[in-house]
Image (tube, rainbow, N blue to C red; front, side, top):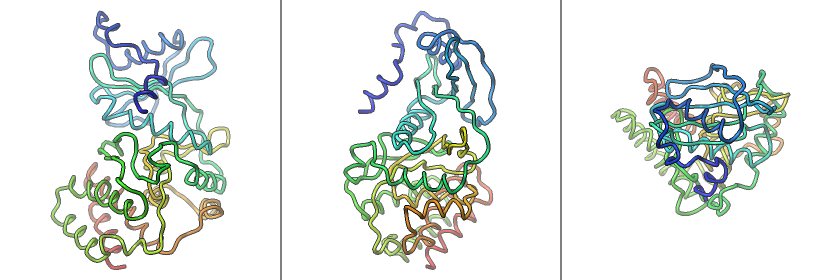
Length: 324
């Protein structure tokens, strides 16, 4: 399914046709794809919002109203960098609830690196919070795109990244709450704990598991079903496009809808947002304790990326889950 989608969506240029080309940088590779498949480039502008592992540029094409964004890495290949984002944007967009950039191409570079070409959207400020909340709930309630998720399984078509950290997404063997617990223990917090290689973090994680019956006590009476999740929803990945809520730069997978809010500590989601969201998805018993668990995943990821005080915050989250 993934291979078919890649070939259909990108109309990628066979690499052997480029064999005689001069050595090119990764932006040159992306510009060649645009010229060959969209038309003559009319302008190129640098963009802010890049990162230590990716750069951004904006392009126009003669005779086309649509403008394009190239997201490129000069060092990381498609599978490790942009494949998950491209497929994730497709999964988010299929729900049809809010503005999500359309993907046009994604490919490895001729001499290394990779790129993603997607729709440029004129983003301005924050969307109406109540509307945004309601549309997020509609997205979480939408029928999944992936056949595996339709069967009730958790994961995604490919592994992706959250920031620069790998995020393993192999599909769960089964469905239901027990399958979600296995997935989250091993492929979310467990993975971050192993990545950290920190004895205190490992001991706190072990204590949290022991105190909660392997997290099962947190989910008594909860029937977890897979929802498509943005996966990294903070204020920098939320905007408005012509007044319509827009989300971008995701780390998509299919999981418990509550896991979406693990980044709420830096997403500025106020009462109006929750009013809209809760109009469709009520707050389940035990939400606040599980919220600490889901935040711990992102705090651990920030510690693995940046170090510093995120370690103590992650430890505190896990300790509060342990204490109940």
